[in-house]
Length: 166
Image 1 (tube, helix red, strand yellow):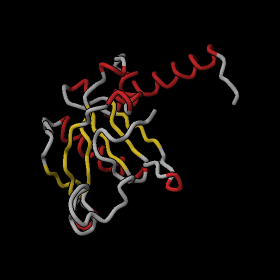
Image 2 (tube, one colour; image 1 turned 135 degrees about the vertical axis):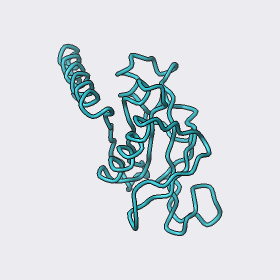
Image 3 (cartoon, helix red, strand yellow; image 1 turned 30 degrees about the vertical axis):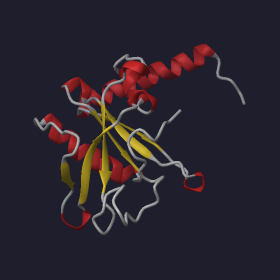
Image 4 (cartoon, one colour; image 1 turned 90 degrees about the vertical axis):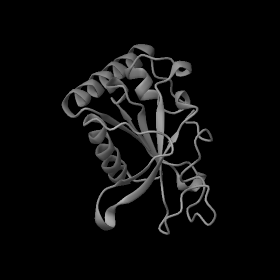
């Protein structure tokens, strides 16, 4: 494996920091998307950066494509910007019509092992991570992860605390 020289890594990180700040200034939140690998059972996931600056936990979602992740997170980020305050146990509907998702808000006990871009932006060490809420969505039959008969593979939407991006 080729190791990136320290000055080159720092230059890239500085560029990423500037980009993140520009997106947050322009749109209110930045969405960090990380692709998964179905063959190895690694879920894709996306999370917001910027809501912590509004006094709200960042939002995390697993198992959706980049477009759907962005649609859900942008919708909910706009609600937070307008004054919404989501809490664990809350049920939400995101989107409209046939494209709507039923979601449940859950607390994430290990955010420091997942939301690296958010912690970098807020200059917080992983052990003092920004708080994060996971958005878990129902399957086609309306069942949430952990409910009897839930149709999706467990790795697609890991339960809070079971996943680490390390």
